[in-house]
Length: 149
Image 1 (cartoon, rainbow, N blue to C red):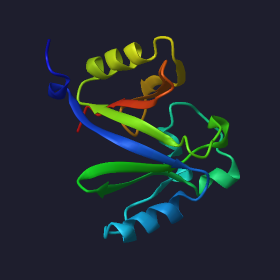
Image 2: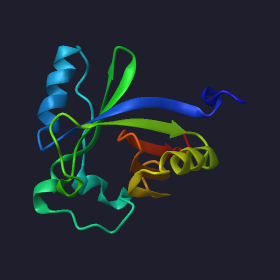
Image 3: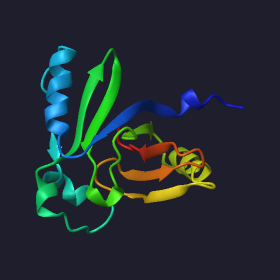
């Protein structure tokens, strides 16, 4: 059996917030002595969503994506859309990025067995292919394929 490390590009944690992501990321940047990162808002990133979603006005300025490297580990941050049902204390995803579509799709399909798909594995502008699911153990995953990485 081949080691999964040959195919996976990175594994990182995504921490979600309920409207205060920017404030939290700036706080963590100061705490870990990092430069202030870039922030992509939902308004700026709406063309990369896997659907033609209408973004509520209050979400437009919220953070769709930001990243810090903390102790050599990439940590992603975002404000969670209300439709996903934010619950304090359960606001993390594991994110796995792959170089190849087939590998990412196989992992996505395996993890979704007896789980629940929140965002189907579809082509987007952010990561080329992207999906979100909760596996049968209630672990939340973001799986993507960054073909041009």
